[in-house]
Structures are given as C-alpha cells and as structure tokens.
Length: 413
Ligand SMILES: Cc1cc2nc3c(=O)[nH]c(=O)nc-3n(C[C@H](O)[C@H](O)[C@H](O)COP(=O)(O)OP(=O)(O)OC[C@H]3O[C@@H](n4cnc5c(N)ncnc54)[C@H](O)[C@@H]3O)c2cc1C
Image 1 (cartoon, rainbow, N blue to C red):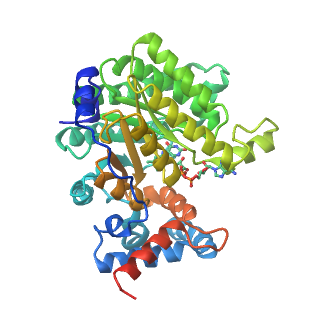
Image 2 (image 1 turned 180 degrees about the horizontal axis):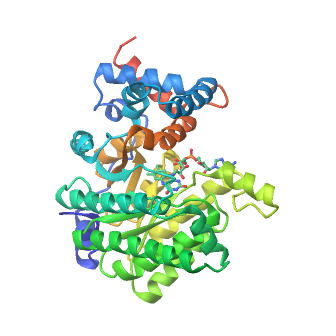
C-alpha cells in the first residue's frame, strides 16, 4: 500500500516533487463551504445542535456526572450517547463500523489514522487483547490505502503504575521485572507488525511522570524500525518547557544512530493535571508559564522540523489555525511542495474541519484521527472532546461559530 513509510525515499523523488511544485494560493480557513461540503443540511443542523449543547459548561459538567453515574448503574443511556456525541467524534464501535467514515473521508482526500479508543485498562489479559486488536488494525491499514497509520497509547498496553515506577528508577521486584519485559515484548510485536505491513504507528504522549519511560520505549523502537522508513512515531508536547530541547536531542540521536526521526507535534492535553500535581508535590511545573510560551515553542518546533526535513518526518497535529497557516507559509517560502511526503497535518475526527478540508483541497497531506471502540470504552475520550468545546468565557466556540456561519451561508435560517 502507499503508506507514509513509502514516502521516506531520499533525494530523487523529493527533487521530482519539487520540480512539479508551483506556488498555490494560501489556504482560507474561513471557507465554510469547503469545510462542511461533506455534510448534508440535516447533518449540519445536527452538528450545530450538538456543539451548541456542549458549548454550555453547566450542561457538560452535569452531563459528565450523569453519564458516569448512568453507566455504572447500567441505565440504558448508551443509545443516546451513540446517536449524539459518539456519532460526532467516533468512527463506530468496531473497525468494520468505521469503514463508512473512512471511505467518506477518502472521498475528500483525507486519510485516516485509526485509533482504538480504549484507555485506563489494568489487567494483562486486557493489554494482550488490545495488542491483538492493534495488530489486526495494522492488517486493515495494509489493505486500505486511505489508512496509512494507526495510533495507540502505551497506557493501553501497560499498567500506569508500572510505567511510573520504571521512570522513578525505584528498582522493580521480580514480578514487576517480568511484567515490564512483557510490555516491551508487546510494543515490539506491534511495531514489528507495522514494519512488515509498511504501516506507520503513532504513540501518544501522556503524563510527564511516565513520559520518560514512554520516550525511551518508543525511541528504542524507532532505532530498530525507522532505518529506511518512518514507521514508529513519538509525540512531543510543546506545552512542556523542556520539549524543544528534547526534540533537538531526539534529532541528534537519530542522526548519530542513522534512523529517521518520526514525530507528531502537539501542544499537550494534560495541562491542569500536570500543574495540580506539581503544586501538590512541590516540584517545578513542567508546563510553560503561559499560552504564548507554548505557542512560541510549538511554532519553533515546526520550523526546526522543516529545517531538517531530509531526516525528520513530522505531523503537525493541531486545531490551531495560526500554526497551520505558519507551516503553509514556511513551506511556501522554502519552495517545499504541499504534498511533501515528510509533512502531515492531522486533526481529530469531528473537529477542525475548516482546517482539514481546506488544507486537503489545496493538496496538503491531511489525516483525521479516527477513534473507534465500544461506547463505554470511549467515554473518557468523549468527555475530553466535550470539555474542549465548552466555552469558559461565555463566547461561542470556534467550531460552533463556523457551523453557524455555514448554516447562514446555506440560508437554512
Ligand atoms: C491529531 C491530534 C493528536 C493529538 N495527540 C495528542 C497526544 O498524543 N498527546 C497529547 O497530550 N495531546 C494530544 N493531542 C491534543 C493536543 O495536545 C491539544 O490538547 C489540542 O489539540 C489543543 O491544542 P491545539 O494545538 O489544537 O490548539 P490551541 O487551542 O491553540 O491550544 C490549546 C493548548 O495550548 C496549551 N495551553 C493552553 N493554555 C495554556 C497556558 N495558560 N499555558 C501553557 N499552555 C497552554 C494546552 O496544551 C492546550 O491544550 C492531539 C491533538 C490532535 C489534533
């Protein structure tokens, strides 16, 4: 299949693409006609209704509590969740269910990064079952041109407390050492399957108190499997003030050891939790002082990856328009073609459509992170999406404003 791995091909093809390159008009992220062309009028109204609902902090807070409570008591609330927030942000309950969404995205030149949305599991049997599922997903991705990559959290494959203990260098007892060896084997088998199938695997970044463990595990896999192609991707969270240096160090390591650094850039999803823990335990917070500092480092990271594009493959994973616009501008300034095989943009399914659809229309490589899984398993993911789209200031969220704009443009009100 034509996976991202194929695109790390050295000079000739890049040179060929450059000869094809002609500057194109800049992307217009306010073009809601393109952003929502995939939605019928009824679907557009439904999305507007949902974002309007989750824009209200009180409803999200109450809904979160009621959902957890209802699921614990086995109340029949799943059908309601499935028809509303689940439908907006997830592909389906299984890979088979998600195929329709994958095909629809492909119709608009959007690729899919398949993400099995289970989280916070604790038993060895569950970790093994998830590993098997990920290997099956790699098989599907091998057959589907529209799915160049899959994604996973290491905490879906290993016990959180074990990862933390490894990071603290406390010394593992005999059972824990055996458990840790099983984690490494699981991760290795998944990466090996990805390598054999020529499918990329993205590992998420998580909390800082386990991230060193995750980094060393993922970097070890890159060293083995990224010699010729970008198969294994690490994630760098630029809301941490030490991560720009970490990105540079990762790149130096890759250069010294002769593998391709494959990296997803994100701002970071656990800011409050990180700050609270640092305050409670009395250490310096790893998080930047303010949003401007995060944005600064994020944009510096984009620039750094672009400056070393010969042996870095990277994914600009954000819903931030400025960072997307900046990357487009920098690419244009350097004469780098929109479809350069080392550069990807990614947004979550159900969000950031004004970015994804407008970028793909201009020929950039764009993927949607598509989460699938049983409704009860993806609840934490859905709650995060709802909270992210809640307005703390009383203003309309960006998504809601864009949907409203398109509704007016189509004269549906
Ligand atoms: C495809 C995709 C994959 C992702 N994968 C991961 C992952 O593996 N791990 C992960 O942690 N997150 C991941 N995320 C989430 C990401 O980290 C962000 O939380 C989310 O995308 C919002 O940031 P933004 O860049 O889209 O835009 P923005 O809305 O511009 O930025 C919001 C982000 O800025 C930072 N921020 C906000 N206020 C402050 C402040 N006062 N001080 C310092 N920083 C601040 C926070 O990181 C916040 O999430 C992913 C997102 C996408 C789109």
